[in-house]
Amino acid sequence: MAKPQQEERKRTLPILQGVLPFNRATLPAEVLAGLTFACLAIPEVMGYTKIAGTPVVTGLYTILIPMALFALFGSSRHLVVGADSATAAITASALAGMAVSGSSEYLALASLLALMAAVLLIAARVIGLGFLADFLSRTVLVGFLTGVGIQVATGEIPGLLGIQSDGHGTIAKLQATFQNIGQTSWPTLGVSLAVLLVVVGCRRLSPKLPGPLFAILGVILCSWAFTFSASGIAVLGPVPGGLPALSIPNVDWSWTLFKQLLPTALSIFVVILAQSAATSRAYAARYDEKFSENTDLVGLGLANLGAAFSGTFVVNGSPTKTEMVASAGGRSQIAQLTTVAIVLVVILFLTGPLAYLPNAALSAVVFLIGLKLIDLKGLTAIYKQARSEFWIAVATAAVVVFVGVEQGIIFAMVLSLIDHTRRGYRPKNAVIVRTAGGGWHSKPVSSPSQFEPGLVIYRFSHSLYYANTQRLSDEIAELTTDQETPVQWFCIEATAIDDVDFTAGYTLRNVLKLLKDKNIKLVFLMVEPHVRSELDRYGVTDLVGEDAFFHTGEDLLDAYKRSTSSGS
Image (cartoon, rainbow, N blue to C red; front, side, top):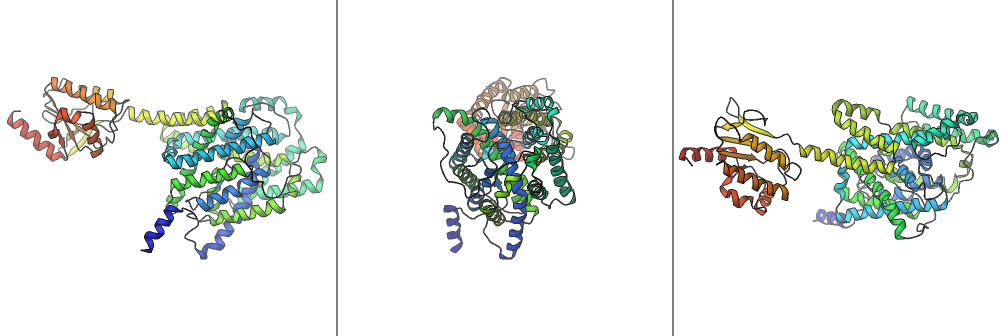
């Protein structure tokens, strides 16, 4: 009796699913994983603020209230929610012409985007739109993130060199960088190279070493000791400490502004949905655990509400951060809550030294983040295994680089849908023929097609909808024309048909008339109950009769033999 009551409470109050059941024996390992993750994540999220165009402290805010809210209200035990390069890049792309980067107005707009994304995520849970996570294929996701990586990495080259680049867009920024290459600040370049060497060197020695943390701490110490600012090396300057002020984004609340930001919010919503769901699924499968996409939608929505009201930008489920925690030994959201506690201490007491941090150091960290997003291994695998999909991935990356991140995600969605439609539009249909041993075997439609003299069994291998009905008509016409033995029965084997739309129902009625003109009886084999109800509704059942539906191949063959032996 206790178990049903417990399950009922879980349904009505879905909290702490990523924490419970709590294993006291693993607590030290969880805390250590959280500490390790904090060392890796703190410099990384500060780098994301350069991508998003917000003050550096807002990066720390993304792993404070938002991360805590998802840990409490999400269902995944592993998904890490925080700042993410893809959504940060979309935010910057949309706000570039609306306000000055880093200004209070710009930050308010970034927080408003987080609020809009939160509303969309919670609405998706209420309406039941979690399935939209499946509308970004792995192919276009690889291409999209690769494009983002190229854009992010190239955008940091001026910061590495200590020069100004006022161009908008990847190509314009590169052109401006080459034009100003003579103004390179050699001390700034030296700092950049030192940070890159430390981070890459630590990564080569061990992935668990917090290379970015070592580099950031080291360069802050050197900047303080040797007064980098006096040598022309730009530094962050004072970073405000203390807890974020909880408030509604201070923007001009107008319908015009919402309409302007809605396409961007939708793009962010899709990226969060697809990336978070894919990451949660992967880690649930790895550790043989369950998670609820619907509960995670609520957790992600609340996390973005926390971001909006604490003065920071959009947060997302991050595959790289999730892997950081998992590889450090984290097996529940306890690790993430530990990270939240550490970041709280940093925000309250340790923001002072950040004033000495050179801008070039953050540029170096972000540059490496961008390079990591460029998935050459994934692109190579797609090229080898699915050549046509490789060009889809490349096209998606090209749109992100040459047009923009927001347009890239829309293009990625459209390409995914076109790719899906292409497969359904040209299904690999077949005919069923008898093998030498008396069994059943499928062959291409173009091959000799009769199972028994006068009987054709045709397998349609996709749902029947408006885009592939012409193929159905053409192949039936081909299979019933110029046969050595006239066709008497034409059977549609329907095991792969899971849906029939209105156009397909109309087409089936026309096909039936054409077959009747040739004295051919149309029958169906192994029709699913749902599909049968659709055929009833479209009037197909009334035209063919109840006796035209068979549950097994033996029933079909017996009926056909009786029909031919009786001469009907």
